[in-house]
Image (cartoon, rainbow, N blue to C red; front, side, top):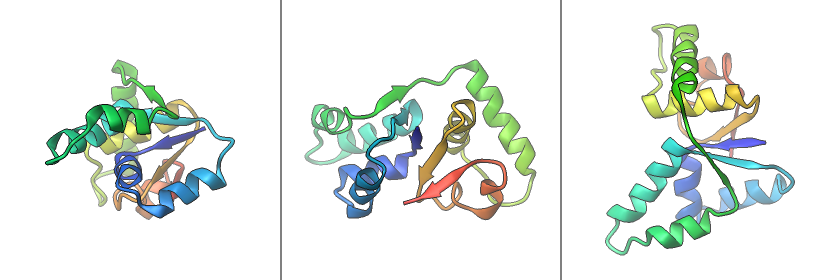
Length: 129
């Protein structure tokens, strides 16, 4: 199982080759699309001049959308607490995505500099694509 962050989903929708290569190399995995990341990817489509939200949903239909709840919020706060006050500072969305990775005992796949930062990798399993 792999947790895909917003950078991955947006890059995938934009046709970035490294995302397609990653999916092909890990073709037996279950892919989880956290609601915060899924929302950001769909917002990008909706805000674009030729946005196609339904097309984006179809293009991402191979993944399982995963909702956040109160426990996910608590886990996100615990991750931020473990990281401490030094850089990097995780945004709410990044912390929630990291929390889903921890809850599901799965790697987060990202190119986001905050998630891929060495300090983040000390408390969350993160893979770069």
